[in-house]
Amino acid sequence: MPPEPDPCAIRSLIARFERQRLPRVLAIKAKVFRSSVLEPSDHAVLDALLADALQARRYCAHDTDAAALYRRAAALYLEIMRRALHNEQRPSGLTGLAANASGL
Image (cartoon, rainbow, N blue to C red; front, side, top):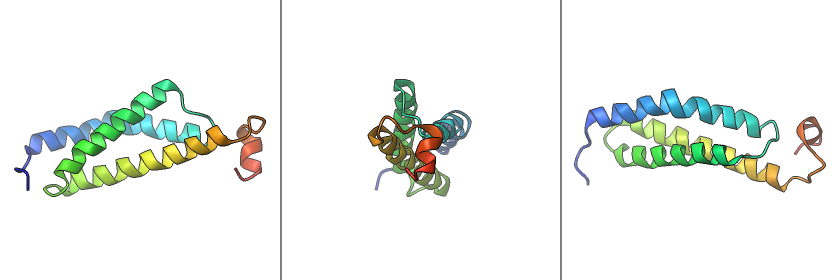
């Protein structure tokens, strides 16, 4: 088992997630659930989210807050990417309300 991490590093990671990553990721989630597709800037934010999740994963054995961050970040990433893929595969004629009304 790796040595126990610095508690300050964990707190810093969690604070960055809550203050910087989470608001932007939730905005992206809302965007894809309105049937929009991801833009390159969205991918950059999601890459940073995934990097934070992987960093938090290293601390999961030592810190329940880090484990919660990992689970939440991974779940958000998966949910957003699944919906974004769905949006990308949607016939181009269906957008916005039409896509939602058809159940896509």
